[in-house]
Image (tube, rainbow, N blue to C red; front, side, top):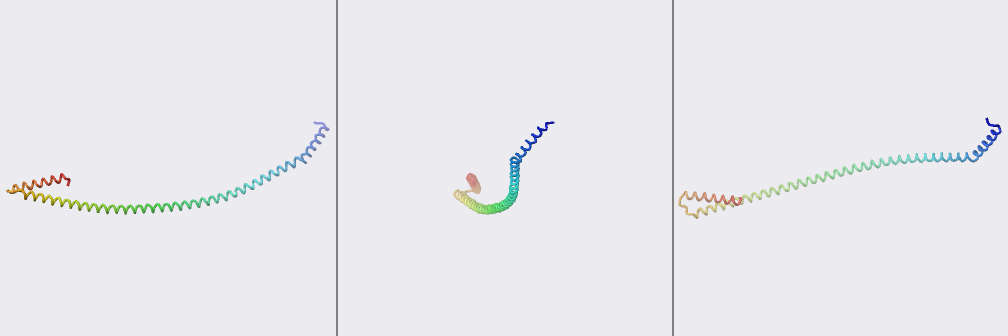
Length: 166
């Protein structure tokens, strides 16, 4: 157990240190704690305001995204309608072109048919004239000679036609 004199001086020094701390130390510490508390309170208020602003911005963002989606759907719908119109017009043009080409082909076929018939008639007439000319030129004495001459002329005409490709 310490001596009473030592206890007294320890008590006096403790009271002096306590008085100095109470006069200059505690006010500084309490003011720092108050400043820190005020800073934390202010930070919490700012954080709350930031959260409120963020919530407002999120709502605004959701609204803008909704409007953008509506606009996108509208544009896509218009694009689909335009595409369908273009396809429909292309199909109509293709049908018109096909009908035009078909009509032209029919006209050409008919013209070629008429030309072929005309050529055949012309060749038949020419063949007939050639056969008649050769028959008349030859002096035909007997019926047998006439038949032989006609067969010979027909064979020659057929050979000429097959050689010319008609």
